Length: 169
Image (cartoon, rainbow, N blue to C red; front, side, top):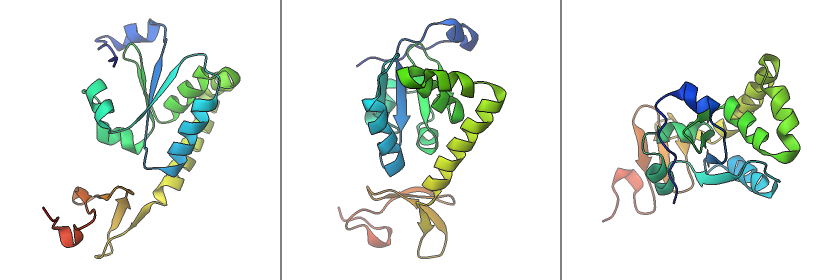
């Protein structure tokens, strides 16, 4: 396992060539998994390593990262500590792909970044469809592994045998 070096000076990190990118994605999101599979099939000018966000591997490799935040939006970490999130992360990922680098250059300007942000917002809107209501009518985000997120209470596990908030031991 490799770990990304810590870079104290972000301006210096911007001048360091990127030789590898780690893409943290939500493995529970069908759209994210589809994009992960698509990325794996593309010819890459800069190698992409695709790791589930919030996983034990992601936490071990990037201990200083806000891992809850990486589940909310795509996060890309460069091999020398660069960090991109949201629309900028999408542009960096496209930049790493042989067939899509010209598009990444077009999206990196002010008007292109507005388009990239719109695409990121559209993906977020689709993901918001996974929000539902709990028994009290509050909005909660449900994952297929039994975890759910309630903005008032945070993350909760309601797996098999955990109905009513009490899990069998």
